[in-house]
Image (cartoon, rainbow, N blue to C red; front, side):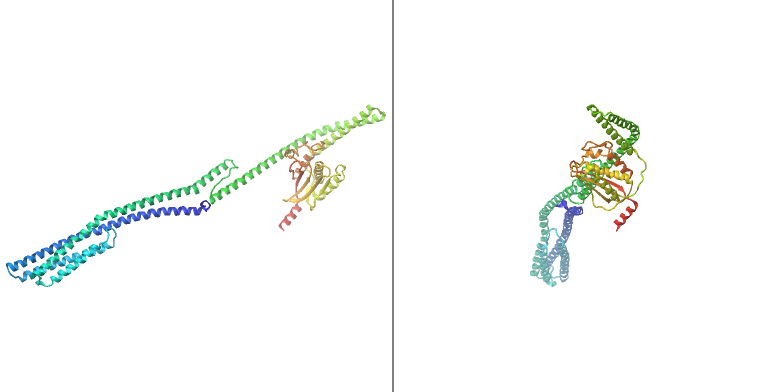
Length: 529
């Protein structure tokens, strides 16, 4: 189905596959980079908690020191020196400052926890926040207990504050343990993530490689392979193999180009064949013209040399026959001699007739031409032939046609038409039919003499207009009739062609002649109208 797509859709599909490959690889790379960035950012943010927890431990140590001082002050006051309001106030003030410093560091730690909540990596800090809330509660209890400066004089309050500080110390030391535990678990979490990411990466790379192979395969099948077939086919045709045809399995623009090249090759082959045929026809015409010219030149000399001896032979035969008749010889020898003399006369006159035709054939001078109605000329010839006794059992018919005017020599053209009609009649059996048609085709007068006789083979058509070539069934004829017709038509700048479907299928003789100037103008006007 894809092979029937236009090539632009195929290119779009390949671009889409390429875009999928690039998008998949880019997405995977971005996922890996962002995961690494988030990991680094999370570690960086979490690492900021360690200094704060350390500072909380320092402040807690300071708070324990102040509380230890308060305990010593209480013991000294009651067991050694007695009450000292100034010293007690300083101890209570220092304890409050340490407590405030501890709360300040705790607030920084709380803000850092909120900042870490926005990043993904080492998990949630819910336990730290819960511990911070507990620390806030302990600090509130300590603030309530140390609100009065006299708390340092009360042993119960001092013990309560000390217990709360111990609890605060426990909670403070718990804060880094959560992060330590999370860091220990983080390795397992990261291992699962990067393994999953590795599997996804390999899967995406494999899919991208598969799509790339498909893309290369489609490119080869849709682009490179058709181009190779077209290139090889054009080279074969250029090398002279005009029978070669380009075959493409797809049905896109490449196939259309191949079909166009095949059509061009077919037309070129037809043109070459037609040109070869025309060259062969022109060559045969040139050879035939040379033969006719040679025969004409030979006939002009031979006819003059033969006519006088033939006349002498004929006259001698007539004289001997008259002398034989004067002797009144009636015996068998005399009859035989008379028959031979008559045969000599007939053959002499027949030879004289041949030489006269040769003389007519050899006349190559300019013929006098005049505008002649070819239809009337053909009717006159048909009328003359219809009175010949040899053809009374056959039919000659002029098909319905209009008058056609052409510049011809009327006597020579009558000889052409008469020769063609009699040849057609001679090739038919009793009851045969010869038709003559006259029309205008391609600004030329066209005369077609058709018969339903014995037809012609290709060999006969090839040599038909050569001198002394004859295939009359009667065995008679000199073989000069159609040669003279060919010369007359050629002298009129016309063309004659013999057509036949084969032996027994009849024949057609087509003669084309130039039209008269007025006839051409009238035909042009008629066609324009």
